[in-house]
Image (tube, rainbow, N blue to C red; front, top):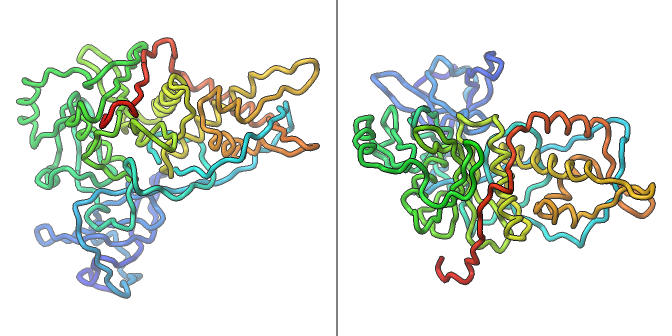
Length: 436
């Protein structure tokens, strides 16, 4: 059995953790860092094959010292002041049940290979084979340049308005803030402070009660604000720093000029409180209508994630374009998008009516035009749902009882929807605006 002092960075061994059912388990973990506080050793562990948001500091009594795997060689990478990015994929499934209706579908032209990247909240279903990430634009970076520093959570807790948030990932806030028990943020301008007193002083001077920029949507208590990353650089950078605490997959460049940020808020007597946001490039040659997307943890699993996605497609409809999120998608982003695409496409298919006894017909291109969902995403969703069949020289979309009933149940729960009549948005032609 190894001694505690022999456990160093790079070692792998089973570590005790509590799972979702509150039961003890001993998954294999890697030691990323070791620190000594008043003679007591703490170990920062990453559970192998688990999401990084579960990484944590543990005491030596949670280590299985009988099964330590010492690294064969130390591969040290140079430290850099960079910021991270990456993504996973998802399973297929085979829905069963008797056929209830069929729709004849004609595939469009050959599709180009798409690239994939976003993040947000839901827990529904997800996507087919993701492509490799592009490394040149937006907020994506090469994961191979990660170092130990950026693999570890560096902020303990964030106070944002009435919420206290536990970050999931590293975020490049100034180093002097990373040792604080709580980082205090103004919930309206997102400026960060060292202490509660610092925040209180700031609030006496901050006159913002909503995100800067133009309010382009309001229905009930929900509003969306459009923020130009060039005109409101400080707010946009602070938003990116906050978002990076909950997004593992994005590099956060401080050059926010090429981006627009759409911030969703909830209104009450104190002001417009941030719920989530998505960003998009002002000009995207790949038809990306979302670069990053996030619902803040206190608002997750309440339908806001799908509302953000639906809003991004409403903007694409006004622009007269089809859009797709920048890829590869994160695990939660993939679940949310696959669920949104499935529900949106099934809504179209189930609304079709047969004429003169014929099967109702629709093309892939028509589905794409109606929904503004890019053709590649329509095809991958139909394949994921296992709806496409080839019969007598044509493609048939067959909706089983299980699929229909599952869709109807899901739509009954989806109470939040975007009302296009409440959207006041005029697209800009950024190609004619020089350097934005």
